[in-house]
Length: 115
Image 1 (cartoon, rainbow, N blue to C red):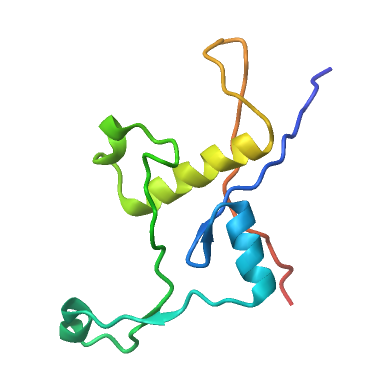
Image 2: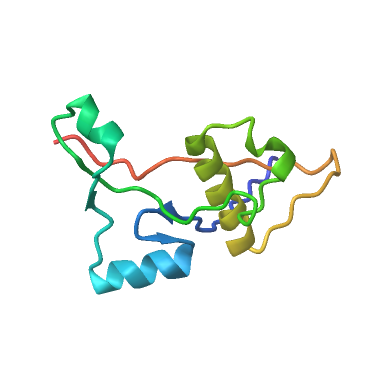
């Protein structure tokens, strides 16, 4: 018989907060991360909208990603890894180099029923 274990933790990298506590506090306050992007690049592209929700003050090294690999990844991947690192810490889980240990990670959002 196989046993299955689910370890739940929360990791958040968002425009209203980096980290669970910061994000939750901003959510309760009703803060929005939406801002008008007013840079030459945005003006020159002629985009239909200039409103976005940028993630500010994100430092991948402070988030636990080794400096030597940061330049190898795009920003979205860095966000995902930082959120995963935080979720593991939130769950009180530590990865080990033991090959007998089996860890997995599910990254996704809440599925809503069609209707």
